[in-house]
Image 1 (cartoon, rainbow, N blue to C red):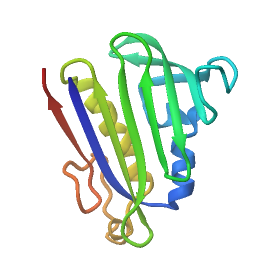
Image 2: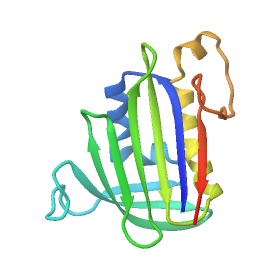
Image 3: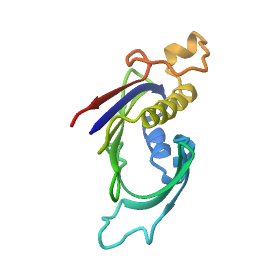
Image 4: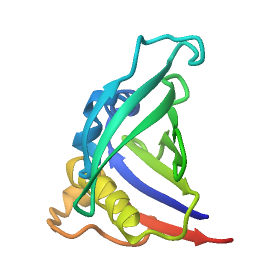
Length: 168
């Protein structure tokens, strides 16, 4: 089993940022491998509580098109979202948006897979948080006008990191 956790600090309104990140139609904007995400069935079905959604997510993973059904639950008041891929070989994840320094928010994404460490998944997560970081740079980094096309590595000070814990 592999576990990845990435954290970055951004300058944004926390509620507005969470609303944007948890809007399922925007999933392809945040994860470059995702080519589409559409609801499956009505918004509320017998096995999915109110506030939850079932999606059919299409992705291009290493040149191979994959489609999976994903269950997503959001808690706007707690600025948290959890998801899991239904079926074999799936994964589950969590997204949290929390307050950081005044005017800044911390975004933490955790993903667990049933398989071994996957460099493509790690790269996709790095890319997704990197794009957010470039769009919503923390105030301190904006004042320095530091421009970079590379995603910074280790966490703290507005930088992102990934930790892959592989076991089993």
